[in-house]
Structures are given as C-alpha cells and as structure tokens.
Amino acid sequence: MTTDIPTKSPGTAAEPPPGHAPAPEGRPAHRGARRLLTRRDRITLAVMAGVPTVLHVILVWVTALASVALAFTTWDGIGFDAIRWVGLDNFRQLFEDNPQFWPAVQHNVVWFVVLILIPTPFGLFLAVQLDKRIRFSRVYQTAFFLPVVISMACIGFVWQLVYNPDTGLINSLLGTNRPGHYIDWIGDPKLNLWAVLVAASWRHTGYMMILYLAGLKSVDPSLREAAALDGANEWQTFRGVIFPTLRPTNTVVLVVTIIEALRAFDLVFVFNKGAQGTELLSILVTNNIIGESSRIGYGSAIAVVLLVISLVVIIPYLVATFRKERRT
Image (cartoon, rainbow, N blue to C red; front, side, top):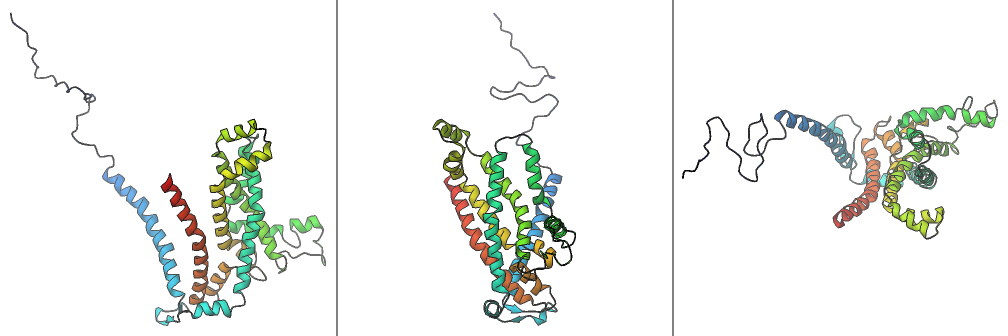
C-alpha cells in the first residue's frame, strides 16, 4: 500500500507556521519592525520642535537670566564697557528711595483683589448657568469668551472710546458730556485706576467662565443625583457637593489671577502709559529700561522683584500638582 505525499510545486509559496498570520497579498514579508518615521518626517519634527524651543530659550530663559545679572549692575544700554557692578544698590534704592515703587505694589495688590472678588465670582455664576444646557449655550459662551481672544491693546482702545469725556458712552448716558460737566475717567487720578479695572474685569470674566465651565463638566453626575435624592435644592447641591469638587479649578483660578495681576501692562499703557495714579510694577520696568533715562540695571531690579513674587506663587502650585500626579 502506497501513501501519496504532497509535494510543493516550484511556483507555490510555503505555508506559514501555525500561530502566524500570512503576509498580505502583494506585500513582501519583512523581518523586523518597520520604521514608522521616514527621514523626512524626522527632519520635519526636529524643525517644528526645535525652532520654538530655541526661540523660547533665547527670548525667555536667556533674557530672564540676563535681567537677573543686570539687576546687580548699572548700565545705560550703550556699550558693554559701560556696565558697572553695584551689588545690591539698585534694590536698596528701589525699596528706600523710589516714591513710585510702593504705590505701584499697592496698585498691583488692588488689581488682584478686584479681579478675585468681582469677575471671578461672576465668571463662576455664568459657568453654572451655562452648565445647565440652556438654549443657545454655545452662542453665550462665545459672546462671553470673545474679549479673552481680543488683544489687550485693542480692548484699551475700545474702552478709551467708552470713557471719552465728550463723546464717550458712559458720559453720554450720565449726561456729563457737556462743557463744565465732564468726568475725566482716564485723566483723574482718583478714577482712572478703577476705570482700567472695569475694562480688565470685563475681559477676566470670560476667562474665569471657561475655566469653571471646564471644571463643572468634569463633575460626576452621580453626585448631583445623590444630592437630589437626599432632598437638596439647587443652592445646597452647589454649596455642599459641586463647589468642593472644584478645588483643583479654584487653585488654577487663583494662580491665573495672581499672574494676571502681576503682568498687567498693555491695558494700562494704552490708557495713559501708567501715569497719574495707574502706576504698576510692569510700567516701572518699562519706563526705566526703555524710557528717557534708560536705567537698565534699575529696571532689571524691578523685574527681578516681579519674578520672585511670581515664583512664590507658581512653585507651590507646581509642587502640589506633581505630588498629585505621583499619587495617582
């Protein structure tokens, strides 16, 4: 008795061993992993990631370190030979002999207090209302967030028209746009800081609304359902259930508001260049570095003070964030 043994013809491919899928038709089987990125892709990624990184290092880190170094020198900006080491003299003069420094610090503190007490709660209120999925919610979100995407310089020009003593909207509504009855919202030292803060709050409200709306979207719906089953009304649910879960968002809001208060510059500069009662630390830096006197070392000392205040706020936030990521 003979057994027929199947033979492979020269033109047939060998069957793959068990457990291995056959190679797709029309594609040769490759040993080893196929390269996902071509040389052109790697060059493109290197350029896209490298150019912004180099610009960031040059424009942010190098300038920041140079500012720290120049804070201990005196220099008028003309020729590197004119740089003279003075140690802590700039800081001593800043804290003791500058009549504008402490008023500027006070104005920055007022800026922060106003932003945290008025537009921040109002932005939270808008976020809570828009989180209810009312009709045209996207339209309202866009309308309230629109000032955030507009340049602060443009906002300054718009509010200059609003505060114009002769043809401005506010004086027209109050009837104070006639000769002898003008209210100088920008030129009066008792009013101009508050007038600028109204414009800043108008923009900051939309920013806070988006941050809180993102936090509300991450709240577990079962918490609301459990509170409703317990008989809690809407205010009790928000106060006892929703708001405590917004603690991470509140931390971000606090840090963002402090940074906004410290870096406030362009809006004030457009209004009246930070004069007559609107002095801020950022304005003092600009006036000393690129002003008529060009005291680069002294202006850098003010910038270092701003940097230290910012780090005091940012570093604890970063430490808490990294600890939370490690725990999770």
